[in-house]
Length: 277
Image (tube, rainbow, N blue to C red; front, side, top):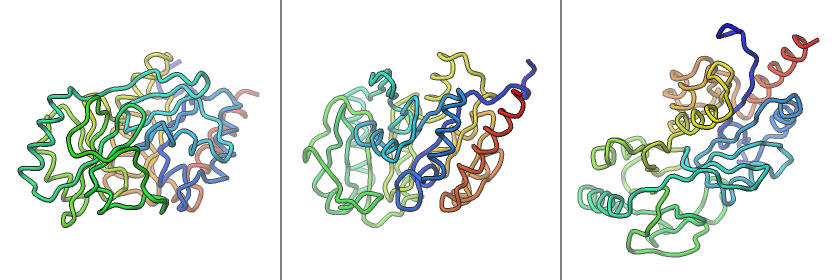
């Protein structure tokens, strides 16, 4: 079948600001639409900055059926049907220790947190500056650290005086060019290793499944969604998305408050059902 004529075989959606409503929980109409896609045979994927521990349960907390959870901005992939963590990317220990040292030296006042294999750990100064998560919940930590831990999958960098966009620009020169510096909507920066970006992670999954780019629809709203929106055959930015995400997408739907994900998926399912008759 020529490119552009293939049916949609995979839908990938960011969570906060996208599949989630303004309350940071799965938006009910979008859950219903995703489940209709799932039932029609479309592969359904959550792809987010959140970690699989905690994030996967939240993504399915109101009944959404999903095949995979790609977390940490593309740093790991959890098969939700088998419970197997199929992929996890991590920094070289010496490399990330040196990177943290450079950032701390060049940007005094920075505070740090880390994603390790099954937990998030923070400096006390990070918790003091950012005591609450996106949903207003008290930020949870399984440990307070002063040194860089080992087996790090993601680094969080915050600063009391530098806003998020400026902090991305300030941190980037001090990070290896193969690493990814972005933000997922929080007021701090996230650094992930080579290959740990949403577009790359989805490309790897699709290669395993034999799914072409033009058979993929992806939704996003923030800077960490840019590679996802560019890679997918049909990248859909939310009405509430950052300008950079909108310009990276093929189209813009309604906001997450106005069921933008649901509107697109409902039409996809209806169109493919009609074509199969």
